[in-house]
Length: 496
Image (cartoon, rainbow, N blue to C red; front, side, top):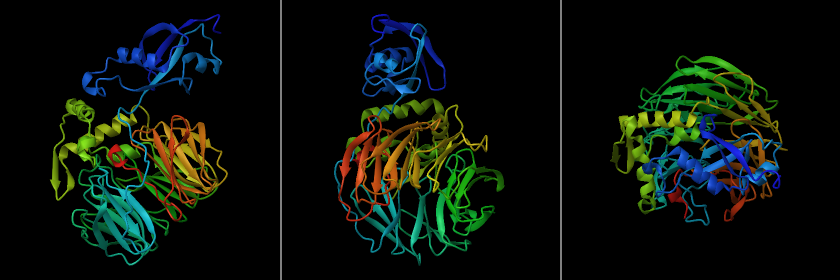
């Protein structure tokens, strides 16, 4: 091919299929770096959006195969006619980079029993943990010290969830009770939410852009029901019944739909305004253990600006601040207020969250991925169809967790088969297997820039993987027992 074709015509397109510029000819051995210069010139990015006045990072694909070294090598693996115009899809990458974890900065000690649930606050400044010792603890990550110990539960704290504005934390226990806590004081808010007849399995809040008050909380239970609570009035607003076995996981989507998975092998889609069951998603042959939405990251962090919410102010570059100025056309800047170290959401932030949600969603509908004890994953577009978009097979044991990358382009799955697998986020196509753990992989978490993935295993180690090279970046031993919980903070400042 080298002798016959030294130059060829290419056409840039974005992920939605929109054409950028006109076809033009390039050397067949052109590199990604040179393609980036040409593409950025055509895009004509404003200087305020550039990282230190450098071009926005881009990745390039030919029929879903990334151009890593040169266009020629990528085309050699493709059955393409180079006499025709070759379409190259460009994908913008995160303009910031998260530094990989290299060591343990501190051990947060205080719980007297196993830690069952952990969650970073939406800003990433604080950490909450629920334990078998019946307490919820708040940790200040700036100093890596205990902040408050919240007492009230009488049994194991199985699930915790921060409100989208970061001003409340909900915790559910094996005694079927739900408590609300004030992170600023560690005190209980309102009355205990009682109604489930068995233990709490999952908690999630209504997204901020749907309700700036963060008023409604959803809970699922071993009793097979889902309840929506009015946290201000302290009462149950709706009871959603229909599952015949334990509900394992719930997700509140950005379009106002609530998704619940169950051991009855189904996923149900509920309309939260009136509690109507929209559709039931069927396909799994065993318990559905886990679910993830393509919009999870945007819904969790979209209300906060990274330049002011990071732990270490010295790590905030001017580039982050310049990004924020891009929100001016939407009616920002964002107003910030602080009350004893806890961020307060002003009315403008629910609008910012809405913009972030729709910017990430783009022209694609919200996608849902589910993992099961039947060793398979299913990819759904639940707002539009009850038929699965794809069935993803390859794991040799039950699926523990599935997670979309923040940019929604990759799905990662963790399994008892000791592996982590990567899948294409829009189609469910298999991409790679990450092997290195010698025992079951329990949980996984993405870095905010979608470049790194961390996995926790019963082999007592954490492993950090490079999503681009699909290789192990850092091995993190240190735990004396199984690592059953992994969470990634939003900002690079956490990683030393």
